Image (cartoon, rainbow, N blue to C red; front, side, top):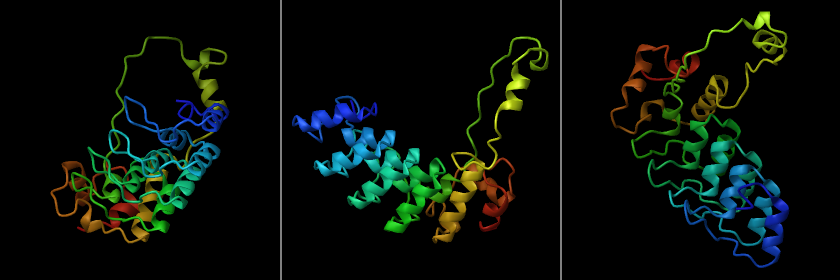
Length: 231
């Protein structure tokens, strides 16, 4: 759809021509508001809400626009959807994730903060019992390795890999989905009352999360996060 591709002018023209604001795609059941929220098109999100779009509309998988905005860290869209009274604790169909789960899974600290400020449940349990805090204790997914072809080192090639690495700015300390952002998100949830003893709401946690009791270095957040967890 025009909204999903971020084409604000086209979407605005369609709305002006009387297009159904909550029409959904046949495949995934997402509406224009889902697409705009996912893309972070705040002007379009605002226009769709003003035209009467349903802030809590669910896709075929049960996701609301707020789920998508939170998973992508689209803070402007998150603010608009919360102001439009989007359901804060709506759950999707398969994992039973709330928008806060979606924010935590991608370490979107600012989005999580906005949800908690609005009254989202900090210890909501997913289908496997996982709370948002539990998602931050899971180990990162391994990156599949690919065989490399033998080639001259970057130092031997003008503009090669070594030169590019020197020119590339450092990403350390960034707050996206990396470790720094994950630790910040964990600290936020703990500060807002997340219970480290309820990571899986009474259910047996997966082996990866059991490793936290052994201070397993493979966990995403060693340091302060593990210190806050029960022995």
